[in-house]
Length: 78
Image 1 (cartoon, rainbow, N blue to C red):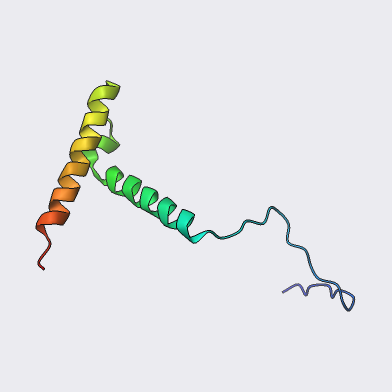
Image 2: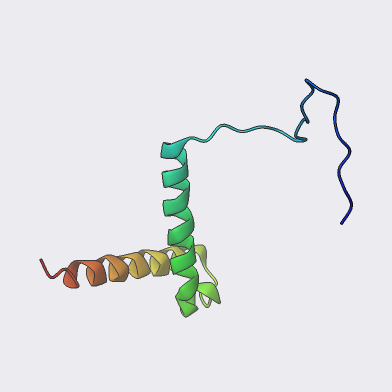
């Protein structure tokens, strides 16, 4: 293991690259979008893009989401 060089007393190391602030609301929205895209990729017909026309492809995505939400609604046991 290669030891790190010590800095003089009172100096700090700088991290390279941009520093971003963590925004909880933005992260939640981004996570929801990424999870939705991940779920859509599990639908084989959409992932392989059988439909050639954009209109047909969009309708299949809408149908997949309708199916997903109906499955969620029907699985509710409360």
